[in-house]
Length: 530
Image (cartoon, rainbow, N blue to C red; front, side, top):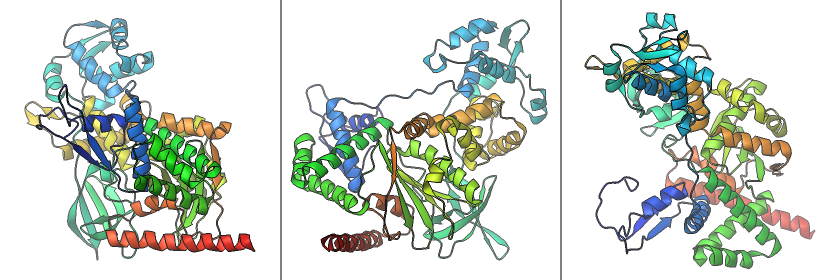
C-alpha cells in the first residue's frame, strides 16, 4: 500500500522489513514519510539475514546517489496488439499500412515486424477457419487483398465488456489420493502451482504432499512421508531483485573481497562505515560473513565470477549450487535451462531451488553429473529455444496462455451480459492449447511473456555470452566434505525447507553447519602449520 496513491495520513518514519528488491520501490515507500514540500522523508531498513544486509547496503547507497533501476518496457505484446486493433476497428475502416505505421509510433511496438502484425489481423479476421468449430469467432472483418480492415457488428459489446490487461487468477483444489479414495484437502494459488511439476513436494496445513499430476483445476497428491519439500510456500509471492541492483551487489562483493585480501579486516570495516550508512555492528557482520565464505570456499561469487558448489543433503541427494547474484528472473531462466539439459543427460527429473543470489539443481539419489559438462551444454544463441522446450507443456505455460488468450479476446471474460468463470475459461484454454501451432500469434506471445516478462532471458543471454567470452569466470569450490555447505549457500538450501523448519530448527541447522565449518578451518590451519 506504500506504493499506491492512497491517502494514509501523516507519517514520520517508514520502517521497511526486508529488501524491497529495487531502488525505485525503496524510494517510493520511504517517500511516504514526511510527504510534504518542506519535510524530510525518513526511513529505516531492517535486514532479515546477511544476504539481505548486503543487498540493503547497496540499495541505500544507490538511492542516495540517484541510481534508480532502469524501466523495462514490454516489446511487441501481440495479445495487447489484438485488443488495440479491435478498438481501432470500432472507429472506422483502416488501411493496413496506415494502421501499421500508427501502431509502430508506440514505443512498445516500434520494431514490430510486418509478419507479426498481419498474423494478428488474420487471427482477428477469422482466417483460421478451424477456430470457429472451437467457438472462437472473428472480431473484425479483414480483406488482405484490398489491404483494409474494419468493425464487425458485435465487436463493440465484446470490446467494452472484455477490455483490460490484468489477468484473473484461478485457485486449484488439492486432491489427496489415499487407498484409492480421493479427498479434497485444500487450495493452492495459481502462481504457486505454476512452479509445480509431478514429483515436487510442498507443505499444506503443516503436512507434506507429493504432486502426482496436475489436471484442469486440480492438483492430485499423495502423502510425502519423510521426503523434504522442494518448493517453499512463498515461492510465488517473492519480488525479484532488479538487474541493476544485482550488478551493484556483484560489484560490492568484488570490492569488499579485494579490500579483505589486500588490506585486511579492519580496513574493510572502516571502508563499510565510511562509504555506507552502516553502524559498527552491521559492518562487522558483513565482514565476518565474507571471511567465513573465504575460509570455506576460497572465493566470493560476483557478477564476474560464477562459483559452482557441490553439496550432498541429509537425504543423500547430490546438489549442484550455482552462486550467481544476477537476480531471481535471470536465475529462473538459467536454472530452468540447465535443469532441462541435466534431465536430458541423466534421464531423470531434476529439482530446482532459486534465490536472487543463485540457484540449486537437486538430483535424485545416486545421480551425478560433471559440472563443467553441464555449463558447456548451453550456448547463449540457443537459450531461448532451450527455454521454450523447458516450459512447453508446464502449468506455467498453460496459465500464461490463458491470460494471453483472454487479453486477445480469444477467450471472453463476459458475453451478452453473462460473466464466464475463471474455471470455464481455463477449460477452454486447455482445449485450444492442444489445437494451436507454435506459429500462432497468441502462442508466440505466451512464449514471449514467459521468457521476457516472467523471466529475464535477455540478461540471461548476456550472462552466457560473458561465460563464452571469458568476461565471466566459472570456478568450482574444492572441498573434501560435500555435506558441508559454504555460508553463501545456506539461505538457498534453507529456503526449500522454510515451511517445516521452526526458527529454532533453522537456527540449530545454521549453528550446526557453522560448527562443522569451524572445525574444517581449524583442521586446515593445523595442516598448514605441519
